[in-house]
Length: 228
Image 1 (cartoon, rainbow, N blue to C red):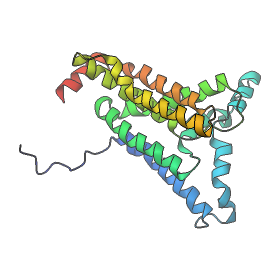
Image 2 (image 1 turned 180 degrees about the vertical axis):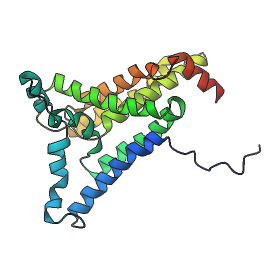
Image 3 (image 1 turned 90 degrees about the vertical axis):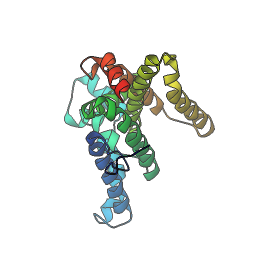
Image 4 (image 1 turned 45 degrees about the horizontal axis):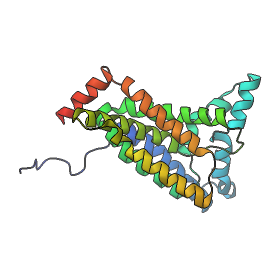
């Protein structure tokens, strides 16, 4: 089989994936550099904790604002900013892996605007679900709810492909099922907080909005898949 000698060995990432990944990586390395004394002086050791307090999403704070009606940027902004702040380097790495892999798959079929919409929409849905169902005073941080939304988008795409091939669409939910099983096992062994609520809500939001992100929705995605 002949191959194009001018073809890139690795398909380029959609622009949205690069734009989302850069601040995640840069912020994490700033935290590490500050903790190691390479940036910011002595106070930089606490950069991560300060960022979690200021830009992590705290359900109890959001609940208090909703009850009193005292809304401010400091209350609303964390619904978006928490996705870029992680608890550790490995936390960031795992989110980055999902973002690069799932963002690429979703972006190639649905476009960069859809990646942005799913990422931020799922982050917001995850935060709101956590605030609705808990009164946690611990900040929600990290991009898992947002990338679970991309898993939802990928699940929608895969389901469309399976249906186009005449296969049962339910097979598309294997990935999220495996992830939830792993999460359950880890939770039973090591304990877990309520963050899984935000992640499930993120997945649901990503899956739900995917048909709306392209003109023609489901039929257009089927046409794109058949042409690949």
